[in-house]
Length: 259
Image 1 (tube, one colour):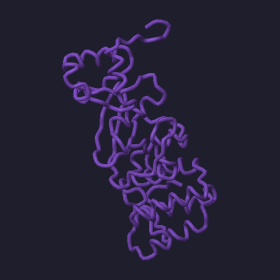
Image 2: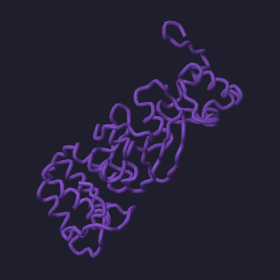
Image 3: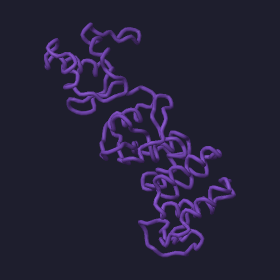
Image 4: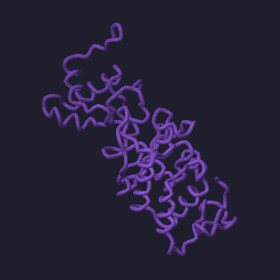
């Protein structure tokens, strides 16, 4: 390196030119690209040298992240690369990205379509959560695929354990300042994917926070109508003791005061 410039040999540059930025690649994939031009041992040597020169990050044996540890949002991009195409930053990580919570989570959470898994790399934990057909509702900001604010809130209501529990959801909801269009998007996810119990939980919390959130009047009216025939009693916090007061409007057992 001279004056911040990293010199690459012609072969190193040739390998760099075919690598997809921001993705996880394997030495086998690089071998397929170059065929007989470079033997496997040569490819391994070139990849190792690119790691030494800061062009790649070694994720595990035979797998490399195409980028630098010093890149902006490296942790997020690395997590997305682990999850593969169609994944997005989600749950507490998305809340942090959108500045809806003050604390940066110790785990990077990513949503994907079909395969949950967990990894540790460089002292950082990565958690990939499979959402199936609910793996929608994201956009790219500063090179990071991240759920929109309404989808982030929906995902967190769906899996509150990945964002600090319902207390974390309430904090994020207060900070979100949803517009009319945001409420409409949020309602769309509830209509498409939510069980009656989830709708009741959301309805109870939003109803209790009407003064702070100022949701459109029709939002709660439609949500209440959608569960009017439900005989389900929703447990507000399902993983703690089922004791508390009963809210008859939303048929919710309030076993923890979160609002």
